[in-house]
Image 1: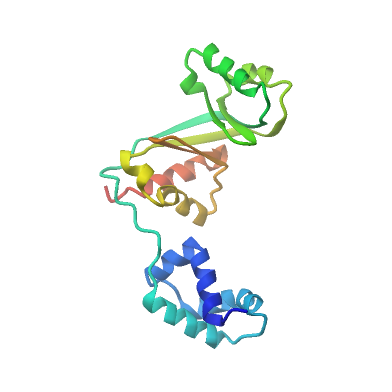
Image 2: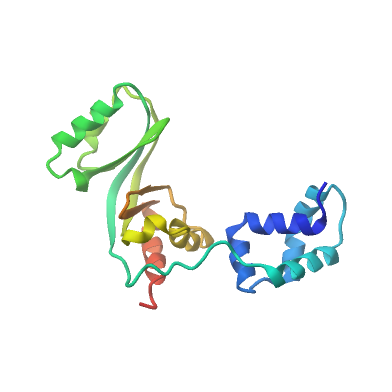
Length: 217
């Protein structure tokens, strides 16, 4: 069994949002205590008072520092490329899938603009322009399609060289989207690029929010 202070600390440190707000002294202890009270009681297996939670929060605030540090590697706002009229396909991996994807790549004169593939342990993501969709669907005809999103858009962000060594680089971009309820369908990344995939209805909001992260520049 854990104590009330231990339960409070566990809940706050589990949430990046609460951790960041706590580190910036933006937390109203009374409101947070009311919000946390049901879960604290579940963790300590007994009823507790809001006052005991408030005391634990205030003690934690005095010594709290978030593990996440602000991103400082961007010397200027990065290039962001928006692509629309896309389809997102999830395909269960098979013995023949890689060979089929290779065929798609070789047959496309402008492959980079038409399709992106991410090969995972269990399934593969295909993000394709609808111009190339018919050809891909034919090649994947006998494969097991686990999910298809027929109307998506993407934002590709060019990343600095040190981004791969920077903790929280993805969080920097997705935290504001999450706060505003903008759903990221998927994330594809390379050493120098981050691609976020959205429902097309969310793309304008998402692009505006990502641009606002660099307004100081």
